[in-house]
Length: 391
Image (cartoon, rainbow, N blue to C red; front, side, top):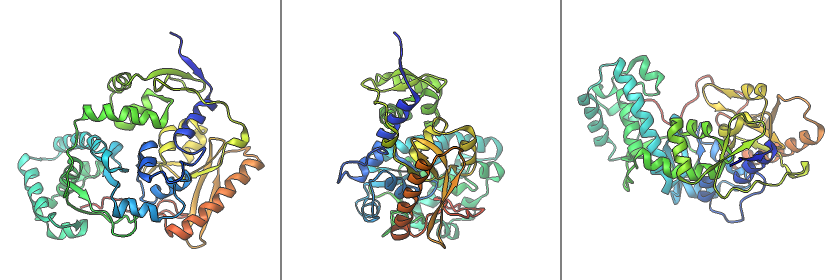
């Protein structure tokens, strides 16, 4: 059977439609539905979430976001794939956590191979954390109250794996397993302060096999057409396991001009029509936006991709026109203005004006609704504070 052929422009149109970047979600669409549809939001910074939703026309003021995170808890922050923290729909949180469990298991094995780490050590730290976390605690509070044995350093191998102490490793395990939750902030959904507590309504984390079966359809619905390798990398899967998961949902292969390997689409996939230049809106996306996190190589030149990607935080804040990444952007908190960083050449007057118009809109949104946007600022600190403060 001959595989269906698509142009790269058709593939880009599909990505933008599925990511709600061509047109905004229908009025009054719950934010939880938008976050689920676009494949969850990776949180290099908590500011990424409201910025990603604003770029899609799903958010014009912060109140609905704060309501979903702080009050109704329909959106929650959990550990997940790629050693990252994610904003996900509450009902999908256990599935997201399943990939954190798998990742932490491999990290623990690497640490145990270099550092003498026994089951007794882990159990002692686990009991100490459980006893303290009957009430909410920040990392600083835990550091002051935990016994010295729980704060044992795990050496350079622990630092490389993001768990410098025994307590930090065990806390992440408890969080990934669903025993703990990151206590929602009281007022601002983008508050980066982390506090943990025993989850009052724990939901069990499914097995890795069950989790892969669930995310295959959801992920492909957000990013099709997509190479098999992109799916495997997104969830830390072996290629064979990733292929089996896609085949189990009836996904099929297509050929996309400009992408070296075959891409996968849902069984009912219908290629979008080609778009006129005027139909492609300009967009300014945050650090590790769901779209650029997956498809950056197919929407930019290698020069642009290298320039806006860092080892510490991945894909940076990007500006796009006609589905092509042309550079990056940053917010000047002192001057209260978005600054554009042009990297691509031959941008053209029309695309430049469209991006500048989006910069004006984004400036107004940040200034009035967010105030500060960590990791999206003109001067990025040498050592930025992550969501999970080191124990």
